[in-house]
Length: 315
Image (tube, rainbow, N blue to C red; front, side):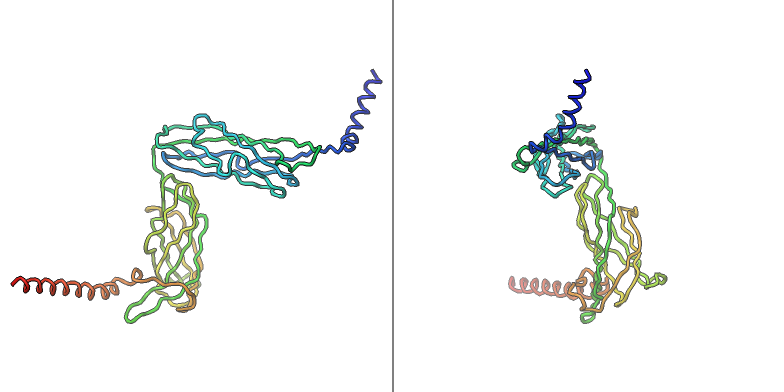
């Protein structure tokens, strides 16, 4: 018995030497995913939702591939892996994105749906040295979805900025105001197209104590698709001269203020930047009337002259 134990001990001790002499190596690599789920509880019929899952590994000295299998019989046709069923993980890349796209059909039942996405890592073809041994690792992405019969209008403002602008300028008697381009990175957290209903600025002196002007956006703001995150721009007129100011802004969703804060505003002398000011839309009501009234008068006069000539010709 003692002899058998001694022989087993010798084999265990000699195994590393034996593997090295045979040129056999083992590749041990940690593998994980973040987040470990695809979840949305506010889907509607005919909606599309995308979520990114990162494939993360600890060892990047070899090329690998991830084989993707969808295990969700009830909603198998709804789910697409944008990158395909096999995702390459090149050498040197620690994090590789996997985009899961959910497309809800128009006849989907209003209820909860569950499933999973199975991920298995394998050596990339022709990338493993002869005699090498690679351990296959895997992960599981839980799918948790709900299709509801209710529209949700909501969004979050992730980031804001306002570029420098030119001050307004006069052309004859008309004053064309400067244009504040207020950029907003907005995440649509609802399940229908959405857009901020209004953006307001209260502009103060550099110290932020004296209110100089109140203004709000003119024109439409681009709509954002459900579950998407995009940067959109609100255009606000200002009649302030060149200078540095503090603007206190508010972004509205209907009557609710979704985001507010302070931002620095730099207005430069007219013509400094190659950016356009507001056109006709930015004119004051009085200036718009002063432009439109003569135009309407000319149109009415032309119609009257045409009508009179037509009557004369009938005689």
